[in-house]
Length: 72
Image (cartoon, rainbow, N blue to C red; front, side):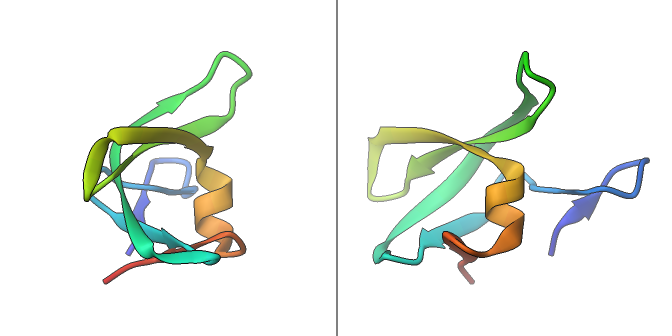
């Protein structure tokens, strides 16, 4: 479940896990959330099986569920 901030905007929470739709065997965990210099909220993800693999994704991309699906 997404946490909600004071503006009632859904935000991605640290510790949540996601799978990329086209690579369902790889699980990514949110390790950090932040607002970029462009004002966009981002999430830092780490591959739970290889913590050297990291990526930054816009929180909106995670919330939409088009490329990433929440993992239980």
